[in-house]
Amino acid sequence: MLKHLCIPPRTLSARLMMILLLGLLLAHLLSFWLVFYERTESSRGMMLRFASRDIGSSVAILDRLPAAERPQWLDKLARRTYSYRLEVIADGVPLSVRAARARVGPIVDELGPGYAPSTLTTATGHLILQLHLHDGAPLAIDLLLSSPPLPVWLLPLFAAQFGALVAISWLAVRQATRPLAQLARAADALGRDARGVSLAEDGPLEVARAAIAFNAMQRRINDYLSERMQLLAAISHDLKTPITRMRLRADLMDDVPLREKLLGDLDAMQLLVEEGIAYARDGQGVTEAPCVTDMNALLDSVVCDYGDAGKAVRLSGYCARPLLTRPRTLRRIISNLLDNALKFGKEPELLLLSEREECVAIVVRDTGPGIPEDQMNDVLRPFYRIESSRNRETGGTGLGLAIAKQLTQQLHGTFSMRNRDGGGLEVRVSLPRKIES
Image (cartoon, rainbow, N blue to C red; front, side, top):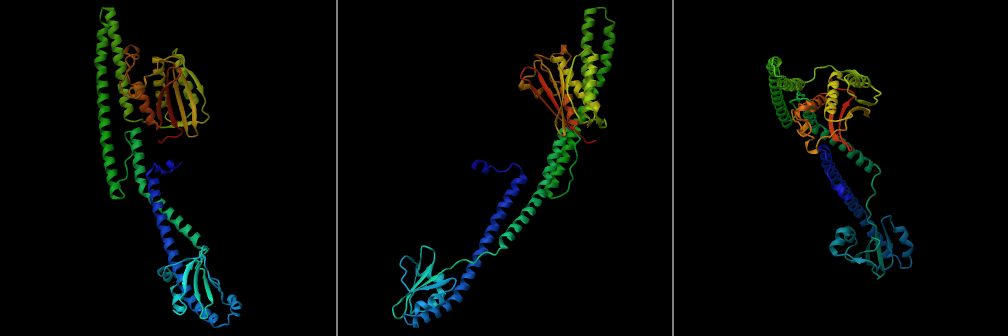
């Protein structure tokens, strides 16, 4: 348990709060101890100054009284913090002259050298002044140098003051760490959508400089991605014309087997070009406006479309509440995943889950070969294909999963994949119930 207590908090705000609170608590405790110490010493010094005269007078009275009458006066002369006993106290520990002078110096001075008191402490913590009267009778002055009681309002005031400092510290830490949280949210949004949101370039100098640097980095990334997408779109678009000319020339060939092979290659090239254009277009952002969508009806229509094409897809699950999303974009995601499952797996299944109150999950499963664990991240890169199981004869371009993930991020969702225990691949798309327009 001690090991867990020594682990510092993970968030910067929690660490700053811990440092501030520990420092404030130590400073508060030190201030409290200094005030209490000064108050105790002041009260004790004042008590000794007033008590010294009373003790001097009481000793003088007892010294002049007959020995037989002295016991009757002990209770009359006793006070709350000191009393008198006509006996020798032998069970104490003698104090040094310096220690005695520091604690009861005014009383010793008031008694004078004629009594020559000796000082000792008892096991109960009392301070004893042992002396002898002029007739040789022993007299012990029992002093209780107790600290003054704490006022009842002191601890509540201390707690209220510390609570106010905690609240102010929390506000200060929150204000100081807010720019970092905004920077993290902006960086996370940049990962989902290259357009992102610019940070306000104000506040403290360090925060403003970080915001300026982040905004400049975001603009450079946007320019780079836009240029890359435009280049991909331009190349894919320009390839459509020569592919069309090659298809017309192939149709005029007399060699039927060669013509069929050329047409098959041209079909593969045509698919690759169309997928490239689609990927470039989706990389520029989704322009479709969000609307309230019945997920059950949407998935049922997708499954029916595949059924009409002679492709069996099982559908299970139910979503009780509608979803504010972009239905055409979501349909493209599901279609890409189902096409992938139909090409490279068997028995595709579409599952609709309500994971949490604010989240809906769409799961596409198959019973195919799955994906090697060391290539799980690679297959999400554009044009990456697993040659051993996904060759060009199957029509794969290496863009299906990349487009699905790209569109999922633009819907502010999460995209994940895993190999099923019984064989096959499971792709999960988790979407918020409400997205920003």
